[in-house]
Image (tube, rainbow, N blue to C red):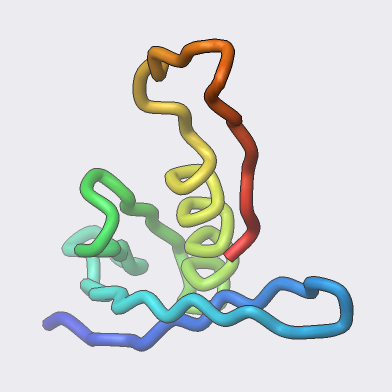
Length: 86
């Protein structure tokens, strides 16, 4: 059985709140507990013995998946590289 959740991640930004919504699919694990995947982020999945543990692990998994540098980006001296928070 799978459950679909709408996951909201909020981060403060100069007293404004930015929201990123992600759909999460939660599955009951055959051996007990739960596991979840985030279809919008390929390879982003986690598990937990309880639903509360799963939710905690989801925050960490999504943050980790979104903070990974995939490959070096070729740049020139005229390019700028910076990070944004969403």
